[in-house]
Amino acid sequence: MTSYYKIISLLTLCLLGFVPMQAQIRGNNIVVMVQPDHQDWNYRVGEKAVFTVQVLKSSTLMDDVKVDLEEGPDMYPTVKRTVTLKNGTTRVSGTMTQPGFYRVKAMATIAGKQYTGLCTAAFSPEQVKPYAQCPVDFDKFWSNALADVRKNDLNPTKVLLPERCTKDMNVYEVSFTNNSSRSRMYGILSVPVADGKYPALLRVPGAGVRPYGGDTYTAPGKCIVLEIGVHGIPVTMKQEVYDRLLQGALNNYWSVNLDEPNQNYYKRVVTGAVRAVDYIASLAAWDGKTLGVTGASQGGFLSLAVAALDKRVTFLAAVHDAMCDYEAELHGVAGGWPHYFYHNKGVDKKKLEGARYYDGVNFARRIQVPGWYSFGYNDEVVPPTSSYGLYNTIHAEKELSVYQQTGHFWYQEQWDEWQTWLIAHLLKK
Image (cartoon, rainbow, N blue to C red; front, side):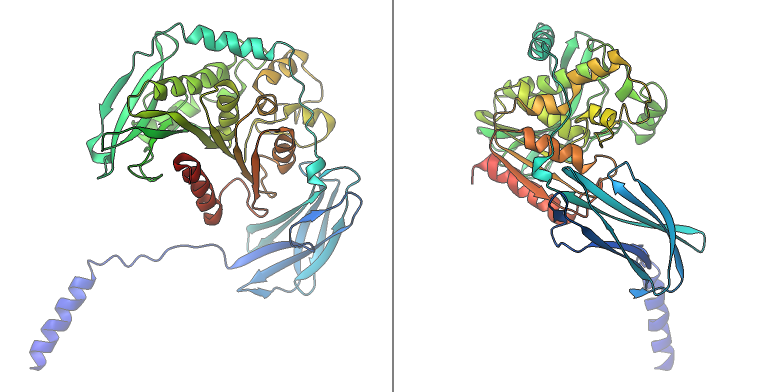
């Protein structure tokens, strides 16, 4: 019997060798925390905000830790100093004399590794106003741009991707003509398997160059979803291809021809995103009534642009919308990514005038459909000053969902709320 149990034990150990035992890496044992004394992080202009700065290891305060502090308006700190936290904690305060955001950023270097925490308090954010000016021919510029691209037939292509299909959705790689017969847009189209008429959602991308997987998770079997790329290249290639393009031909694409509105890289991006609406409208499965657009960061900007330029769009959702209020930085106020004028000591008048045709604020002023807007106060890529200022310009029906602690990312709750809002407007619940 002893031999029998030895054999069973050996077999069990061998089988366990085939079971994945890899542990996941989650977070850091050392955390720098910066907390405001108002739960909603909101203050009135002239009010004092008090921030508690702590450095914790295993959730307990560390002694004698040196912390580098940056304090002041978002992106424009006025105080930089180093303090030693005798008992792992200290308090700092700040205020603002005009509407905006005040940030305290704390950085501690421990055992050669830097840990960072920040907190960005809002001061009368509902009064933030953007600095963006609108060209007098803005509407004519975009009307002409769309008229020109629509002289080209869509000439769509559609290839089934069997490995991506689900029991509810058929998935295709599609393409269609953009601003010339040789310029195409590519995307992943998901269509319900069952015949019928369905609402549609257009997903527009954040900045960068990448492949796309398509969306079969938003109301499966109940809506059409088109997820597009914006660079005029297929969206099913290997990641290494896109990495090379971003380091090569598409490097810094967001700054191409900023001083020439008709040659700006984003002209074909914006027209291509609107052409995606044309493509959805050509589908026999679209119900002809409900069409939403959504995206984050660069995709937030594109959501604004598409909703402003195409009246078939019935709702939009924009998350931490980039590319808004560039010229705020000429006034020492945080503006939107890509921060064209943040480091510029002199103003290039042609670039400034050219950027105005591609400022999300000028599209937002023209939106007439319901929208859901969400961003974080701690976003260091898309400052909350630019996002809140943009939100304040919108006169259409709107909802604001702030997740104060988020940076340029989502919390799960934020993602879930985003999806719930989209599905409700797609299915009109």
